[in-house]
Length: 120
Image (cartoon, rainbow, N blue to C red; front, side):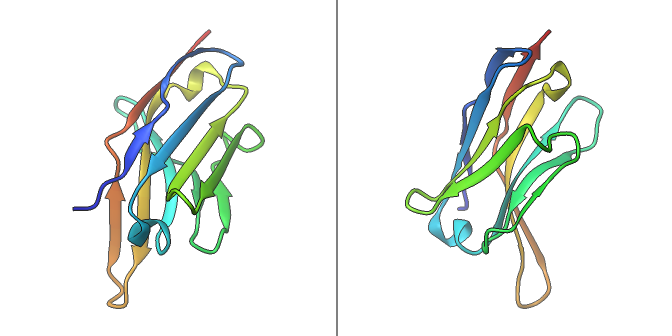
């Protein structure tokens, strides 16, 4: 069973920082695009940042310049460093692993989510 285990959420004041971690198996980490998404009540899930198996990185417009995604191959862990946090960053953050297989099927795995709350 595929597992993505997230840690690092919590409560922080506006302007503060948090770091999220997502650990998974090597078979996911090495061959899937890993990413972070967030979702609030009644809203669509929003892409925050992704990093491909080749190291290509993308950020959502609302977090560019403030958030940094990185990965540690030795521990199969993806990190999201969040700086200059704003109240509007408050959401549940989900780790994701995604790829398209040889049959052109999209494979997606999600973590359980971790709450990030930024107080003003």
